[in-house]
Length: 483
Ligand SMILES: [Fe+2]
Image 1 (spheres, rainbow, N blue to C red):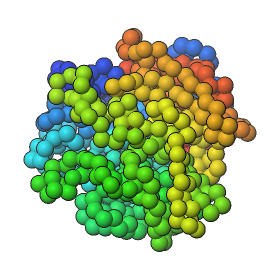
Image 2: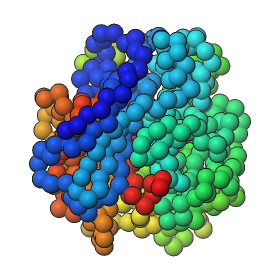
Image 3: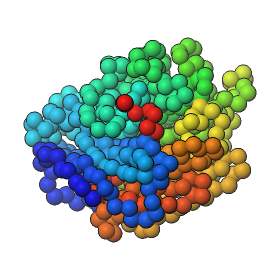
Image 4: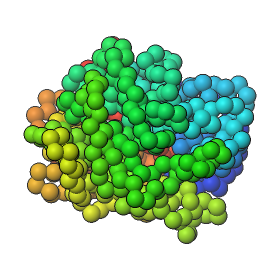
């Protein structure tokens, strides 16, 4: 393996025993380009052409208060495949906040778990006191990678091939862009939303295939909410107003405490893709971090996602001192997300819903060529009890109800694993899941390819350093990358 190391970034982070700054969450500070990656098992497929981009959180400075893993500085890792060869590179996302802290040589902003007054400067996004790290999500649109922040940030552009930072997206509005903008690969459009603490509390927007914002519409909500994801069908976009949001009385004192508002239903807003009246549906109270896919079926809009059975869990009892609350909210086995299907009847206004599986699953992926359309195969991850760490994958055939799983050995943790279609694919599941593994036993990382049809690992490729765990990722075929 050939490695080129870039000049180091400024860091002030010292020793810590924080559970989310150690182990598989140990921040990485090194930026590299690497070629001639060692193949550990199998062979790099010749029918895979494109990039896997993975966003992770890597704090470079000692936190001002109580660190939360979603505060960490965003870093994009890329593995690029072409002609049976693979290269790797990684770069920090050089947000305004990152650059300001590089200049200051220290943290300037507090984090999600901190009280008011911790930050030394006004912050970004819905919360208002946080650094926009761009570290949550990543999509590819109009030939560019777009990194977004869950609290609504500026939307940072990177060249998906070189990872060169290209600045903020001109189409991003003043209230920012939430994580999980959606790209419709068929039309090339990007659909997004944001949320804030001021009326109307939410907006919805569309950016066309050339990067021009063509729709920006206010979505009136009863108050500040905390939506995380959206979904779309061919003709409609689906937004949500779920009963887990900041306590209004505490918010007046600038304290951001999330609670479940008992007796308040979940609400789903369905509106025409290019804007128009919103039809609201009520459903069972829950919180949902991530949707899978949505599609139209006669008069109904069908939405799949992960219904949390216990969205505001009690602190984890065996957590390290002082981390019980934080760790419970990061532990899927505490908040219990289950694969779930909602059906919204546009004619009658009725909602029907139910679980599709009783296992604890989240971070789902599917073949993006089926986005917004009827689809058959879903790929979810399983999590290590107590931890925000993925320890396996589950494939569902949503037509037959069959499922298959891959369990990773203890100490090996996966990253979110999008579906990459094989060149010349015919079937929906003809392709690979791409994931980065952190091996805590060996202190290394690798890329694994899962043959999605046979549902088994077919290739393992060594990465030049051990990466940190993180949140989201994307696959983009070569045809969708900047020329
Ligand atoms: Fe997310």
